[in-house]
Length: 336
Image (cartoon, rainbow, N blue to C red):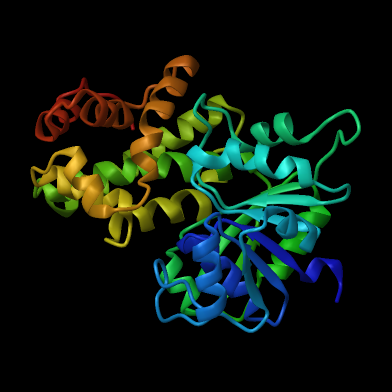
């Protein structure tokens, strides 16, 4: 076995499990880390993740552990698939077991609580005078875990700071139904995965209010414009948002009810309060946690993001969704 044909996945939620299944379906050895020892034991014995992906069997080469030291010792390449709110804590947990020449990737979508790109957080937390350069890469794109785990056609993008690592990761994860495209804009790839979750709440809210297809399409289009403006202020290219991790992921998250962010917005549009909606969804809704981060970042960068600003008012200050919608419509006329 070549070193690039093994993978450790940290995070046994739906997406982490689906990515682990995809790689292991090729016969490559994959070790999936779950925090809860009992859940890890049950998954290993029953050979599926009953909570997130019931009835989808694990390939023979996929195994589960709750031992973080074992997980880090298993392979050179480590893939983090945890909520953005747990990203820093996960880095701190794995650092004591980190080995020279290991490489770090993540499929976490979002920013840290201060608005930093996760690539910057990784550099700050994982590099040192002894290890000043860490090969890193991010994965992002329009992906629902259940479809990926079921072998349905899926494509995402990968960007990083080391071409060899990006190439290895794309080859490792590519299957007959899962295609990985290389991106050259790490900033755009990461920012697109964060902002699209906030916009998707707005799209769901628009539909929940009964505003129709015209309003939904306008919101998605103008949401993309906001994403690009913020990205350019942070050094990303406009082109970087036109692919899978920008426009593609935005379209998926805004239009399909498998999206937790869209479902949250839809429930709010129908009159449910935020706590009721979050409890009914029962999983992390990244856009809800990200809206304040995006709001603060846009203010610091002096970037106008009216859709995100109105969603901040709805989600944080409890402004009625219908008022937020009409306030957006009644803004001063500007150029597209």
